[in-house]
Amino acid sequence: MIGLMAVHIVPAQVTDIQQVLADHPRYWGERDLRSLHLLSLVQEFGSTCLVARAEDGIRGYLIGFVTPDGTGYVHLIATRDDTRGTGVGRDLYAAFIGAAREQGAVRLKAITSVTNEGSIAFHRSLGFEARVEDEYNGPGRPMVVFRRALPAAP
Image 1: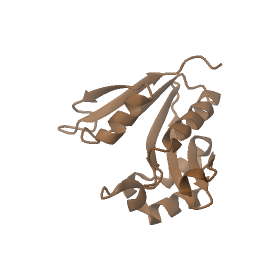
Image 2: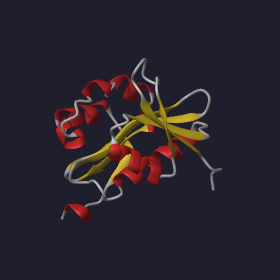
Image 3: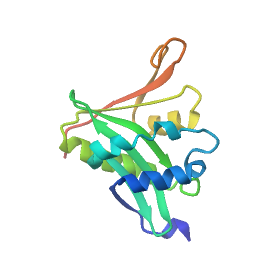
């Protein structure tokens, strides 16, 4: 009963990301995004890099950091193929918001490819505004840029 297992969101360790990379297709399907998994981000921004851990392994993860201008930037977020639709992605974002706020974040930002319909729908459901920026990743390389203000902490 995978859906009933307790999931705990904790700071990521380098070994967690190495485990995710060893099982990369379960999180990313056919897309090879291994080169975006920079272990230095986990080393340097450990409190804002998170994993959702259950008895059966890592259900999802988020790699993010806070920029000097107060932007909580989510570099990567993924859930394992058998975990999608269970709320783990939302829980990871909620935990990231808490950690980013502690570091002074007042807004959130993320990006995705213009063809990633799942990511676009997910981020919009979290209240992000989505805008295509034509040259975001260089000439002829548009990206969807998500932005969302963080309301004052309760």
